[in-house]
Amino acid sequence: MKPATIFIDSIKNKLFYKIFTWFTRILLSIAFIPSGLKKLLGERFTNIGVDDPVGFFFEALYQSGFYWNYLGFMQLLCSLLILIPRTTYLAAVLYLPIIININFIVISMSFKGTPIITSLMLLANIYLLVWDYKKTNAILSVLLKK
Image 1 (cartoon, rainbow, N blue to C red):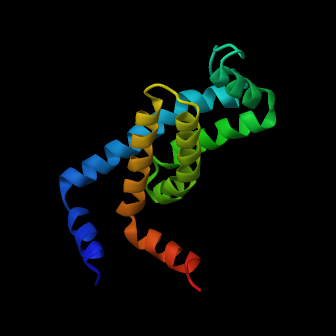
Image 2 (image 1 turned 135 degrees about the vertical axis):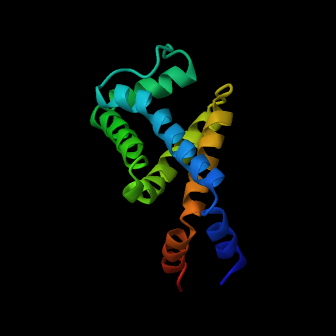
């Protein structure tokens, strides 16, 4: 057995890490609920004017219509699935491209403070993928197979 597998299996049996993992899942769920709900209901996410690049970006997304609702639906779906033990891994896989995309957006548009939050969310999501190392390893081995 690989050392990483042994290490992960050993920490999965410790109460602290089980609580930390639940706490991480809850925080990631809570993080997507407000923005996802606004988007799904077809409301604007921010009131920043279109004269600001950030406001212009969010207005363009808002004007896309169905895509705006789809983004909200996916955020809410991830928020729900990440709390259900049987679907946590699926949620972490779905959450990953969403949070990577959000992270790139906030960094490229020079948001203040938000890149720190989204980077921590990305790290938390990666933690959940590592927590289920065997599933992640199985998927990566299939994807990287030559």
